[in-house]
Image (tube, rainbow, N blue to C red; front, side):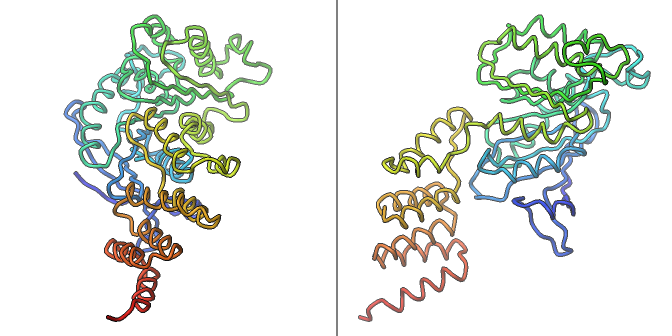
Length: 405
């Protein structure tokens, strides 16, 4: 196992990333790891990003195919929109033999598939076996993973996602197929999958399909099937898949679809990745605005109810972010809702017991409420967890005010 840091100068312009500045002024967004696969008979390079957060926190995992191309943007999206959807461990799986790993069956050369591609094709199920039996156990054993997994892929990577969806349905909770190359094998493979989906259990499974505008001038989504130029093969195959999903309504499956009229096959991935994650986690974010609109509501009770629903959907316990609860707690103090504020600050110390900031905020509450003894205890705890100099000054000030016996 080898780990080195990934650095990315261009991410300097992106706000909100969980990054660490290095001594040479570069920004690290993750590490490069290697996993030897007995199933594939080769060493695989894996790009890994773990959010910077509570040491006791675990995260859902986003597996990104064609990791050398899409890992960095996936990290940027998940970090920038932290809170809108959960922070995620991002795993970029880089390629060795792309045509082998991404294709579900072996084909003969034709006007689209070259002889070299055809010779390499058909290793898709073995590649998925590598993910399931070797990569996932390694990631779960070395990183703070939660039991919620998403796989995303574009083009041939999207084909691999569709293969996993139909034939390894239980492996991931959610599947994102971006302009998937389901034209593969002259659509024979995908048409074969559509004859057997009733056998699968799609309960609590989610699928998002994105389609770019690969349609030549003079055609639209209604008559694109008449195009014989070869330019429309991706769209000509994706649209029937979408039609199949609409008409069959697979029991238990939640799925979404979006067509991108202003994007082509080579430009659709970034927008589609963002839209897919926003759609997938559409019910994840708690709207603090609702508390302003309903001042009669108890903040802690409403938040607790929301995250119980989120936890049920995700399949593990999800707690609200420390920053959100902190902000709401100070808001309650400002509006003289001291009982509600205390409940929120205590919730943060329970959910994030190693956070110096959580105990610092609790200390602020006790100062505001006039309980110096408890304030001193909270600030002392904060300092033991690595609090800032500001917390030390607060504690020193309180100790000066204590009577001398």
